[in-house]
Length: 443
Image 1 (tube, rainbow, N blue to C red):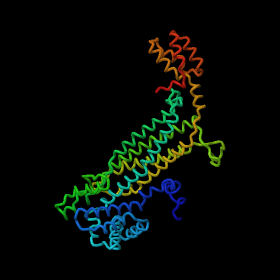
Image 2 (cartoon, one colour; image 1 turned 90 degrees about the vertical axis):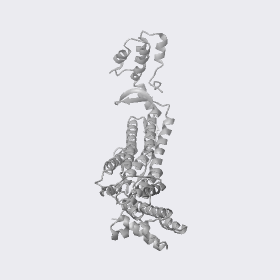
Image 3 (cartoon, helix red, strand yellow; image 1 turned 30 degrees about the vertical axis):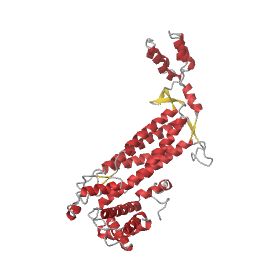
């Protein structure tokens, strides 16, 4: 069958294609070839700027046009060349030389790929595509989600809510504050992620600029390589084998995995709040919640997000463990793995959009929140015994424990009856009676 959304094996290219189609600009086979062409062109022009050969302004413009206007048709042409070379990067080199001949700038074509190995191109092209995706797709998506959660936190900052520790009623909190927990966690991890360098390997067949040095022994090739990679907005790794270490990549994968774990935690909490009826969900007239039970409105967006985040993390974990390990000066396992780089990114972005969709459906059910608080007056026992400690009352914890633990009938009346029986001043009794599950929410 012809490949389309219905025949694709992966849901990333099938069911979810519409949500992540833009990622083909960074992680598809076309994108990889395009970024390779971009690096080859930049390297060629950089050599000219360093006076290894002459290149006039018009020729530079034509070369840049080849990279900037690189099309799907061009990529197909490269793939056709690859059927002959059986080498993907060599096919890019031959494509560029052909394009230079067509443009009438072939005089210096042997400077294309001068002194390089394939990984000088791959380990520069892939980090650059990763950098661009982070800056243009991933980070904006995470930050926008964080802002959405922050907006909800602000709007619900005064809503009291019964907390649950170990699944049991605990000291009340504010709904907005509980959402701010996720805002802060995301902020912290995004900051850490943003501080990881994007690094490239650029140093010849085994990282030592062997071919470069033998041809031009007086050139400072380390300086040259550093300046070239920095001109692309990245850092050059100084001591490498044929490939880069992937240690910074591993740090990115672990960082995104931590952010995804925070989002899984959020999804599960929101799922629980919906289950507890703290939230209702907006209903669309023609949507079906269950094929058998007409009444159901399921929290499918948070469930979908949790599943996709799990898929992303499983792949990121493999990347982080596998990529930094390579036999001697290199083996080819990194290449196979890196071709899947866009897959966990896609699952992550699908999850973020599902969470946003789920948050947009939430309807606050203040009645249920208040009912749970009213049904759990025992949670003010902590407040009472703390004030009694302040007043040096004997064994206050034990007194409240005897009253509240295992007693299913604790309500306002029983708490106030207990207070009335305490041997304390009237003013302290008045202070204690002002405490309710709704106002005992701390800072």
